[in-house]
Image 1 (cartoon, one colour):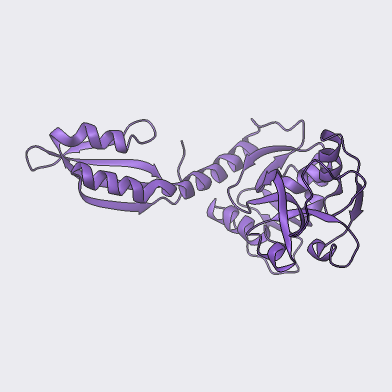
Image 2 (image 1 turned 90 degrees about the vertical axis):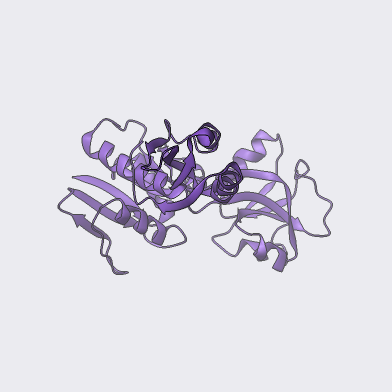
Length: 282
């Protein structure tokens, strides 16, 4: 039976459940369940602390796991990233008081508060800099105000919490994080159960990234419109009963949709319709 670890709480938990359910797996969970077996698909879903998932995967206790890239790197476990999942995006940054004149290469001898000590140690080593690491389990943003540290290193989403605490980001992010699917170093990606799970999840991720756009266009304008909507391989083009017209269907990136519609309209396309995709295989 395939064993897959999902976060039991935190920002990644609910979206992980939603992704797996959309991929066709049966998961009905209350807050106390540590394991749910999907008998139809022969998978045991285990709900573990997000920080522990990389360790369980690396040790082979579970086959696959969903965690954050930042948590995987900080764990120093030998598990490896298999797939980015497209949610839980954040930056890992240094931050210091707004009035500070610190630069991102002058941390030697300073105290850096963080919940991710291994990421910070590795980054400091890369910068050839030695700072004192103050490990905290949470509420890192307040460490400077309390006099525990001179600056912090933490996950940043919008940056609103930093601003509230009178902090500013220093330099470029140490890394960009998001939810990822991980496996152990020796995982067999051709194993049928693992391959099937990954392809199902990939289908949901692609479906969230793309939409279907359909429109009618005169034959003489077809080439221009197809350049705007080239699709994955090529757009689907079908003749209409009205002479000199055809219907076009293509997948386009959701993030570019409104710009594409503007271009299609300007190019002479008519009856432009957009549809969501539930899942797909490419």
